[in-house]
Length: 329
Image (cartoon, rainbow, N blue to C red; front, side, top):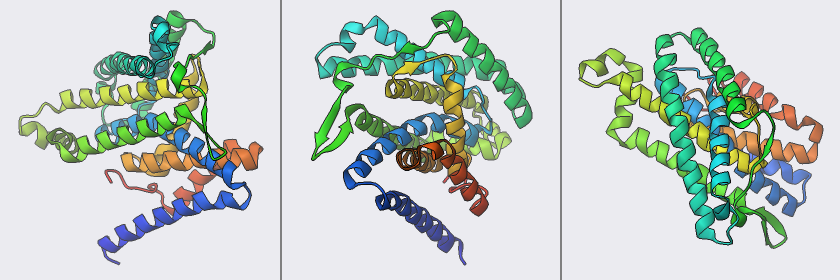
């Protein structure tokens, strides 16, 4: 079978799998409930994509396993929490403009602050262990402990309630289908982030240089490009995406707590493994699979919800050991 035919088969297999995943719940769920669960699953999937995309970019472009990603995720949530606390009058204002204004400000501040943390992390410790996955795991895990303890120092050890902007609260009732307002926002954020990442990686000179640096570091340097500066920028972008995911997920779950990153980091790695290490498209598909399956199974068999994604991951790895998409697709 030709390479073109194999690619077509892979694409058709992925589409068929998605259709089956979406249709199976209809066997046991009323249509209106199914649609409500589907929207919730898509929103959760997009939030997981925001978390996993940073992991995928850093690994796919830098070949770095960053176990500190969960701590950076938590930092983004806490920085956003502080911004909402400072601008509470905008959060509680009965104005769409002010609510979106404070949300955008929180995103920008959180992403900028955590990107700086990412730069420090990459320059101080990660740069020393390029090419050694075992050391990367150990050293970034150690960084996680430090970053989580710093959260406890700055914000305290207790759980905090995350305040959602007034116009983001509540639901829409469309033909008896309950649609949470914030979930729709999450879906659009995920689509927007995926589009921007793909445009940068596939359509810009910067994306070409960084991808070339992964394949042949010496050649890119010989052409006069400072690949290490570019890698620092990539790590900062990955950290910023972790912050965006942390802020968005904390609004979804309505809480922040110091160890929240470790919980969602597990989901992020499941997503990345399902989709394929280093593939942004794979991370999106994997995140949607995880989000949808979790919501469907939680409704049908609540006791099995926690393990269903592990089972899906095992099945996919048995069929395709590299995940649904090869790196770079």
